[in-house]
Image: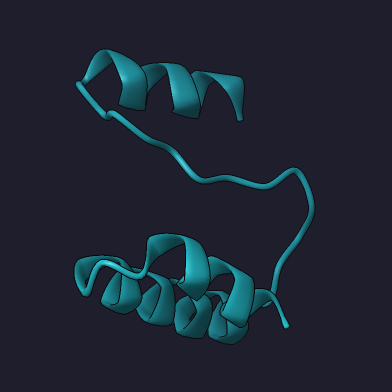
Length: 53
């Protein structure tokens, strides 16, 4: 995991979202789609709080 993050940062990534625990692929895909959709619409803080519920 540390090597993956290091490579992304070195390649120029400004932000990285990761977890140390196994996650369900379908739920993660839905979460990320909703998160970025709301982030684009300037609802970054509220979208994160809504998605967590």
